[in-house]
Image 1 (cartoon, rainbow, N blue to C red):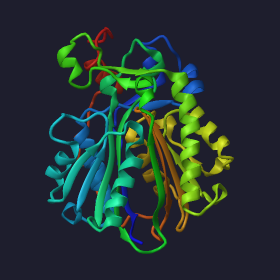
Image 2 (image 1 turned 120 degrees about the vertical axis):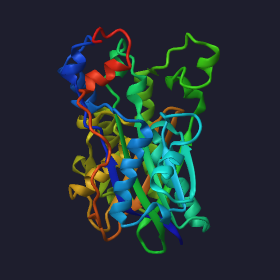
Image 3 (image 1 turned 90 degrees about the horizontal axis):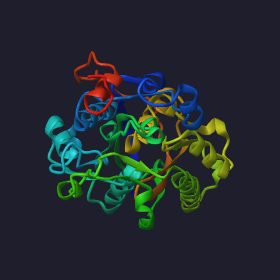
Length: 354
């Protein structure tokens, strides 16, 4: 049976760092409060458009597979923070990289990468696609409300990408399941980011989250998704070698692992360095896990996520023989002399830092 096997990976995280101490200088908070509640020590703030970050991560993934954009039949960008409503971020990526395959954005919020991987796998199984580029890219710093310390400390910017190709072997996406509960749309949302702001100029374009409800649903739903994905693959939870969860909150990640009775040593986390990068969090973590030797040939890698919608999903991937990149490229984006706090101040009102 044809399935999507991951053969290339890459990531881009902006150079400008925003630490907890930086945030404490403009918000009523402190490093210990943030770390104890989220596990986050710092996050990155982008100085370039989301599409540029997506392109940089895509270049890395293509080089890792020693392929070009011309080889891609499909480019999917999972994002809830596109540069524009039209065209898609994926179209901008193709403009920079080349190729004539299909392009589309997919918005399932923080579950977007798992959704994108599943969509690409379905098209590969149907025989309409042989190779695809799947990117998770977010610039959520654009929507931070620095008067709300419960959300302003959580989010950061970045992008991660994978290249998948059709495989008839044992490696690849063994199973996935995707879900959404539309009755929970309002517990995690960004009001004013769409056309409603055109008709109501008073709608704030900021992240709005009911933390307790999100936490409760995240742990329950991600656990359920992982169990279904494992069962559909004909495996057991103890077969999981590496668990890569959406990097939303260390408490959620730990609670999910406990719910699944998974050895904490199999759980890969990098939330301390990047915060919640939404759809980018799993591919960034996957890329880093591979480069750090945390994934071995033949490993069963579980990916679980949840996000606004409320969406959730899980995927079980059997890794192939190669865990090192075939080729590397240098990041080609311009640097910045601004700190994360300075970049945030430039797009946020009321900081008194101008």
